[in-house]
Image (cartoon, rainbow, N blue to C red):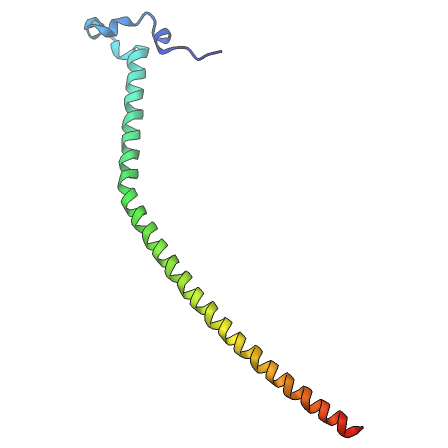
Amino acid sequence: GAPPRLADKYKGHTAYMSDEIYKREGWTQTPLYQEVERMRGVCAKVALENAAVAALFPKLRDQSTMLRMELHERVEQLAARVETEAERLQAAVKTMEAVSTQVSAQVSAQVRQAE
């Protein structure tokens, strides 16, 4: 079923709304007081964690910017390298084609001489 509502959980402990509870001995042992103290602790912990995250955020943003710049620079370097390699390979293909044409002409000449 549904979880109990907070108001139902502390039924009978409405004295916390007045100063009466502070006059009673052992008021710090009431379930409501204990729950409030527990929630204060949770809130303090969350506040500390939030402060830590807030302090880290600028550093993380700066690191992210640096990494993005490094990555962009590396991509540009690799693109330039690919372009250089492509030009080198195109030149090598032209050389191979020229050599192939020469060899083919020489073989044809030798075949004609042999006939």
